[in-house]
Image (tube, rainbow, N blue to C red; front, side):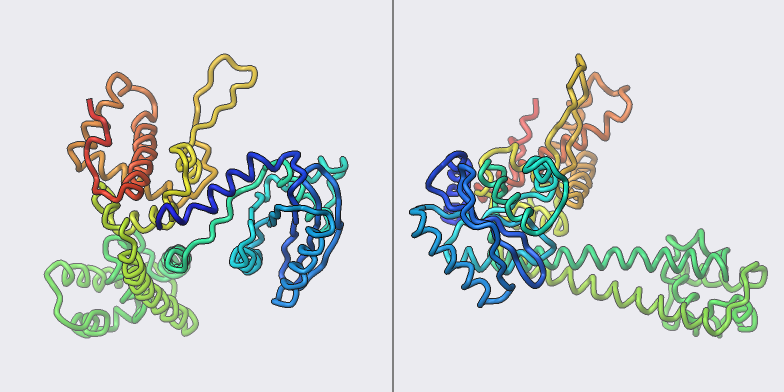
Length: 426
């Protein structure tokens, strides 16, 4: 990720500055779908050149689009060209990448902007594909568009792995809740409150002998060899002995074959997902080490491999941001306030960006503010004189998280390790 990669970013900002009212641009607004796309051809001063072009989502359809574009440019003597897409699941990505590979300018328009601008076109709220493509072109003519990031393959791999990990973690959490609420609460409720503390032992019990009456019929040595074969420390032995004795007085329901089969499937699936998560973490680390910026992010207090990988994937190319405000907006940590008709308001973060990155940054800020002497001093200074305000500690940690994001962006640009001078401690 070098400064050379930012040529498209500069072209994008130049487009936003000069497109409004320009007579040189051919604007192609495309309504993206799964099988067929619809394109609208127009100019930045509001002239309609072609209301609808339907082309398929394959190479023949893409070639048909480019052929019509070439025809329109020559016919109307337009020198510049821009394609606009509304992100639709992942359906827009093949078309966007194809156009960029053909050296064309591609921009995005947000779904919120499309929805709000739809009614302004003709005073109606009705929605159809032809109108949507014209809506996209209209937004681009006003300069209300977003940068289309054509990420390198290694960055796409990292983002894909992080997305996979988030889905796996959701599945893991869902299985844990189902085991507790569906199995333990019904068949062995006494174990539920010990689930988090004794999870390995509890899962083994659920897997092998969910029904307490089965445990009662076993000798202690038989129970231990069934649930937890192999060597065990004193604490593990104590927990297993407590479970064996508690089964005699359990109020749980009798578990039939169906319940025992469900328990077996759920526990094995949970363990399998955890193994996949470990493999995914290892793969994420292998991809991250290909980025020279990764080592510099790890030098920030509170930034471990997990948080560093998330920040790295979110920022991507640090040179595509021109200011601190753009970086904060990307994560939804920019301040917003509703001041209309009010003398004073309290600004809050917008929360319009990446929620999982905000959460990761807050965790990093929390760890750094209690373990690193430089961050402890900085955090203490921000609290001085405001200690009794309600929620002030959380607010200051959010503020510290935003500062850590800016520090991470700076280190990625400069490719240098963390320096406490970035905190500007008084």
